[in-house]
Length: 301
Image (cartoon, rainbow, N blue to C red):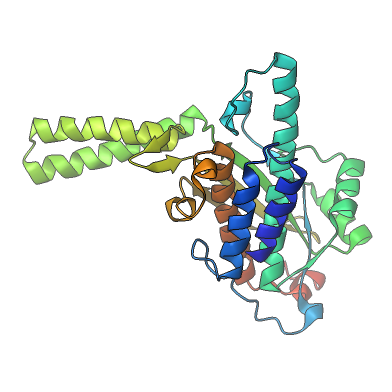
């Protein structure tokens, strides 16, 4: 968590992540939470690998957005009217910084767990560019082998941000319908088919689901800013996928309450908290896998 707070602090001091000085108090709060033991996030699990040489070497590939975001207001609170050119420029910069910071969040959480060694971001990015690995695509077996041969990587982590504030309507509609159908059946059975109760619940569910699945902001004092991320791990001997996980976070009410009022309602603060929660969950899951370098170097996979 301390690593995450430092990353957020650097981003806000430079005003490069969101271009907003109001996020500086947010970073200060995040650092305070980290140093105090952090009530918003759990401590990182520790690897059981005592031998440093048994830690697999990991290359974390550049993050990608798997959803098209066309408006700056989707990921950031915007107080002024921007020209089309200014909005396009700020949006591109903001999305790039979100991807970069998410990558550092994952790296920080993995580093705290002491279960991996890491290829530098500069070396990873240079080889990704040279091999022409496109965003949202998994490396081929041949490309994986190049990471092993040239950078000594045992594992590659490929991560896509599936939803960020904006949620693809197909996924949102499917979840909203499934949630509504399940609750309607339960209430119908419990109430003997009472139409008033069933219709009342439908109204509440439509309101709640609109906020949760479509990023509708505040509902009953809770800020809903959906974030969903998918990560895969590939071993580099044969290019086989050996781990996959998808995590989502809709709100971080407890953490938001600890932030100053001027920061709490900002989209970028809410989304950053949800993204940090996901990166910590993904990092912890990977640490708990207990991967050992010898397994990959001996070709057991």
